[in-house]
Length: 137
Image 1 (cartoon, rainbow, N blue to C red):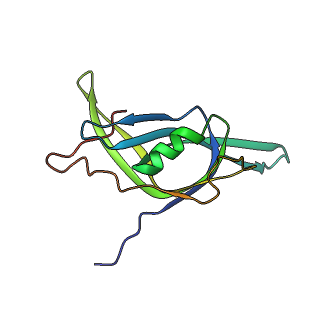
Image 2 (cartoon, rainbow, N blue to C red; image 1 turned 90 degrees about the vertical axis):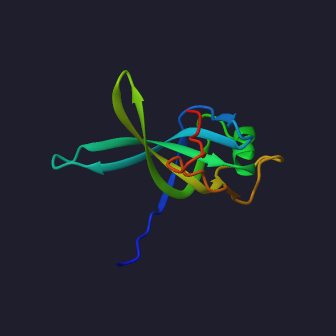
């Protein structure tokens, strides 16, 4: 079997302030939406734009840092991996795809208290394994 790769690199702006939570086992997890924009000219030379929204999860100490320093509108670069989880709502199985961040780099003008180095997240628990938990979102 050939090797596989699950890697995502996104650069965009936060759509709202991040949510920092603690799981039942005491792990920190920070969640935020990230907007990425794409522009092009159509056949009639009219400028077109498209915004895609991505759900980002950061775990561990990096989650605390993101929760403290990030806010709506802030530009960040995220490197991570895709994960699709399922849940039931009103008797229907639903799916959500998110990016589990391995690195978050704060972009834009640094402030005195903003980290200048990328913050590195921990691996997210595998929600499919026994006794492991899914993020509370």
